[in-house]
Length: 328
Ligand code: NDP
Image 1 (cartoon, rainbow, N blue to C red):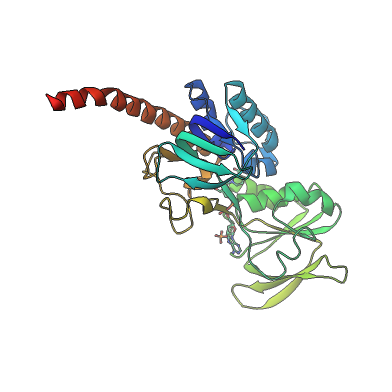
Image 2: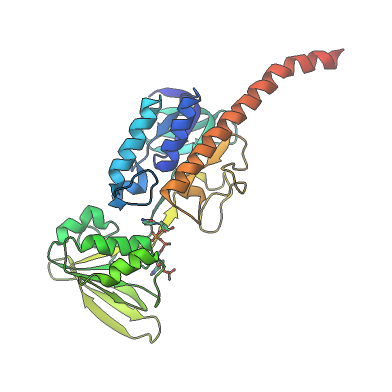
């Protein structure tokens, strides 16, 4: 078990974490990124990315994250294969965090970039049939449903993208949405409506995921949100894509957060209420939740962290003089 010291400890390895690392490393802060359970974050489970600036052609999410990571390492970031299991923010700076490995991380500043995770419906059968027909990642599991009937639940960008992705494998993709209007961007909606492989079931929620005799998903029980009528839909695979919840469990009772669990920051900045602790990316952003905005917040956190350290060093240098003056 080792102890690692750094001027900037970054928890999380999505666009926010890696961008903070790139800026901090270039400011000679020798940052440490503790990557967590899903190195690279949510983009590693998406397919095509066509809205991250700088690439005229469509790029792949996992590739983009590999590049960000390589860039962060290239400029001097230390990457840790570890997951933070507890943090001490009260007695800092420096702030202390303990990893799953037992290692201790001590940061003069801390950037929380733990992102968000897929939400589940909480309907009967959903968890039991996980990996047996129910999934939250079409890119990861879509291949297993080649030529089969699949459904996607949700009406946002993720749901529509997942449905479109699944048309690579299946000719029968049903999007199930609880309202009569999608939240997804118009360009994605147009692609969905144009595809001959997709159809939409409006005003429906999934009441339960039901298994067949072989123990895998057989059908969904649906309820109409307008009439209350129930119906069934036979499917081999169901992909839940109803948004994300921020990964803030570690910080409960230590940092202020909103009702949905997103960390509170000073508006327009990544500053939390604890000086020297910053939050960047999806973990503190209920509104935009884009890779590019997360990267921007990561950059802001590193710049603010650098300023925080410089101001602290100035105060420490001035302190003895002040004491001497006070004594006179
Ligand atoms: P969103 O929060 O945007 O959408 C969630 C969807 O799931 C909504 O349609 C919502 O319905 C529905 N939903 C939520 N809870 C339930 C429930 N309990 N039962 C049934 N339906 C439910 O999440 P996304 O993951 O789609 O997107 C998150 C963010 O990431 C967004 O800002 C999005 O723009 C962005 N994103 C961007 C992409 C891109 O630009 N390429 C790709 C993927 C995501 P309702 O509409 O009724 O609220």
